[in-house]
Image (tube, rainbow, N blue to C red; front, side, top):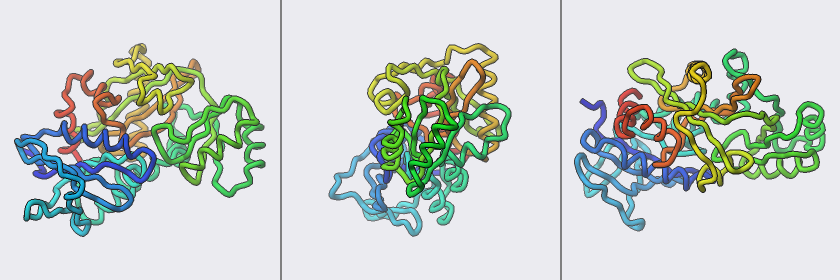
Length: 338
């Protein structure tokens, strides 16, 4: 028997990733077991939360015209629908970027006492900030970290660039510390291009990380909790036509995603163990995806995704199917183990 009756899938965000979030949220909502849960879809952006569609148990999806969409009552996370109040038992968070991945919305659900699908507000905040996340796992022996430098908007940019030039080798990757889908990211091959790349990254946030480029194979592994045990999914190797796995490669077909990844048993074991250790070190819960570069001199950590993409073509659904599960079965595991 299910622990919850009504599941609200909340998507959209306040960042450049909002459209990707909508696609992930709609796919997630359509894949949740309709015989076990009534499913409600909420579009949330810049503080406005609206019910966009719903599906009663064993029913068909009903889309709500934009002009008629009811507001969500944030005092208790409920909605008035067809003259009755529906109180949501569980929140499945599919907001990429803020406020979904940086802990803000988790803090709200913690305050109103509604269980949800992701890491806690604190863990989400740590994992979302690339510099903070690297600091948390710096003492782990299971992965290496690329040399880096951190800058905040308002710092002396000329001095910072001189620091990067003295400490790091080109090419480097310039990226906002908070964000995803490769928005604001630039691969920089020469020092004279660094200031412009940093300014570009600042369009996505107030802090920027510059990392030395690592040569190797890009791999990713997802991990989740099931009945108190940490389980990993089959790994994927990403082979991109572009210089790196940028937005175009991720969403416009400029990459191949090979599942299971063509790695040795020993390499696969190392990646799975590292993923489980990172999950434990950060104190994660729910579904998390960890990205790596497998270099000739070891396994390098790239980042943690606490709300990985969940469109039909996204990485995690591919992993789930390779593991012999349906996406519907997998989502039930995430919901019931939250």
